[in-house]
Amino acid sequence: MDAPTTTSSDDDTSGEGGGWFTPRKPPKRQEDGEPQQSGADGPGPAEARRMASIRPLARPGSATAEATGPTPATESGGAALATEPPEGRIPAAREASEPTDVLTHARVAPTETRPDTGPAAQHNAGPAAQPDTRPESRPAAQVETRSPDAVLVQRTMAEIGPVSDKVTSYFYALLFTRHPDLRALFPAAMDTQRDRLLKALLTAAEHIDNTDVLVSYLKNLGRGHRKYGTQPEHYPAVGEALIGSLSRYASAVWDEETEAAWVRTYTTISQVMIDAAAEDELRAPAWWFAEVVAHDLRTPDIAVVTVRPDQPYPFLAGQYTSLETPWWPRIWRHYSFASAPRSDGLLSFHVKAVPAGWVSNSLVHRARPGDVLRLGPPSGSMTVDHTTDSGLLCLGGGTGIAPIKALVEDVAEHGRRRPVEVFYGARTDHDLYDIDTMLRLQQTHPWLAVRPVVDQRAQLPDAVREYGPWNEYDAYLSGPPGMIRSGVDALRDVGIPAGRIRHDSVEELVAAAT
Ligand SMILES: NC(=O)C1=CN([C@@H]2O[C@H](COP(=O)(O)OP(=O)(O)OC[C@H]3O[C@@H](n4cnc5c(N)ncnc54)[C@H](O)[C@@H]3O)[C@@H](O)[C@H]2O)C=CC1
Image (cartoon, rainbow, N blue to C red; front, side):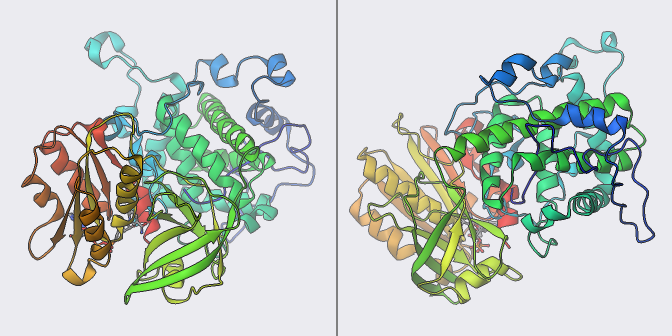
């Protein structure tokens, strides 16, 4: 999720100057369709009420928190994100029920980006999200389990689904006309990633009841937004634009109750993000500078880029980072670490230049030793569980082999002789740009088997079916979104339970592809 997000404030000053929360009615529009800026007199009484509602809560344990009591969400019977999720592993139900692809990150820069399936608004629950007002007529298994706020939020999402592009445009128009200072936090060209912020927020709102996955997602989002310069006082401005845009385009279902549900939901979301960012500030920089120390062009469009961070960069094998080049300020893309943590502190990435991929093209064709990049914090849960002896079944497609190589090195460093089977897929022999490294690793480690799979001969998922059995293995997939999807299907077919299949978010991968 790459886009500066929101803001909110701990004091009473941030509402001054007007325009904080969205007016109940859509703002008057100018002839060009852009919303007008709010007047200099500040918000009216209705806005003031909402501003109070959306202000983030004090941190747990603070005097203010004790004085104010439970969160608005809790008070209202809405969702409360109090549950701490297990750290470090993808939730077991991931493939089956999680808010999913969107919530599980991906490079996958297509996590970092996604030609994807459209704004999060399109992930809505559809007709199923409609509340059933006749519970007595339904079988017990179908009794509504969603919170009242979730029902209202999902109803809004269903309404805006068909006009999600307009919602997005209006959201950013409201945000930037009312808060021009926030424009500088976003890339100059908003076309490729303008909907990331809104998409992330809508996705989170839609899954407000799924606390286990959502808290982890939002904390990550909050930490990740530090590199954009996001401050707590920005959150109310975003919330205002969010409500303004939703109320305009979901007008058929929008009422006071719906608005209150969104305010509570957004308040909860922003609070988790703000707290996570504040916690992170105590122990990590918002970003790292990293100097390119080696640039190895492996094919005409694939480079292995090695960098030296300006200060220690802790991460786990299998994770990824966000990366900004000096040539495209504020455009961040995700790349997996291509090695386990090294004693010399260097990091390497495998980058493929793709059409219209501004960042990837710069990294492949322009970057040279001495150039300085910026890195965001590490992210991702496609990491090895060292508490078990299960084998690792790894599918790496194209440059998706990068984190797989890191996982192999990680297993080697932990000295456990657990079987690791790597299927390395590529379009042609020539595209197996890292096969020499993988075969060298195989020679060194008797527990490792590397099997190149070239398209003319077989597809990666089919090749996996020919081997096995895989019931004692945890599976790791990394590569293009289509490969992830068909790979997951194949793995489920051969009996690997969803909870033992790990991969980065397909959506992020799509995004990362640019
Ligand atoms: N650079 C990095 O650090 C990482 C990159 N990725 C992602 O990996 C992808 C790599 O792209 P390329 O190297 O161009 O890969 P590619 O398009 O050349 O494909 C690599 C392999 O995946 C297979 N594949 C592709 N689509 C498939 C489908 N629908 N079903 C079954 N198999 C399929 C291909 O047959 C080939 O064997 C990108 O999407 C990138 O975002 C993923 C993780 C890390």
